[in-house]
Image (cartoon, rainbow, N blue to C red):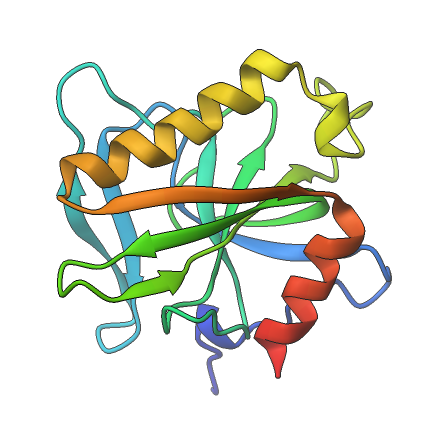
Length: 176
């Protein structure tokens, strides 16, 4: 029997032009930062957030992509309840945060974060763009990424908030 790595699953859902696959690494509410390790073909603990910090939504990646930082394209996934590491969720992109991130070695790389809504979400079904999110929610998401990186000794700057069309363009770029 041949198995496919989670990294190699199709980015897009076959029956839809708008839906993408998201592989969840870290569930909403978790302090443990979990990431898929390609060599081990397993999920590995990469770190623990400080007391009082947790992931605001499920966090993962879009398979069959490679972002500028060398990892698959990051996605923050809005859905009604947390899933689990390894869960593959059909989702629709609502936008992205275009981000510049300073690495520990001093290099600055783009490390954009796509934002998506689970296709079967009831709670978030009316959200189609970043503009549909309450401004406080978007600010809190940005603050989470900034403070998460500060704890790791890295600087993160949100360059732009962009809509779903630009998010799909970022996805296409990461697929090539």
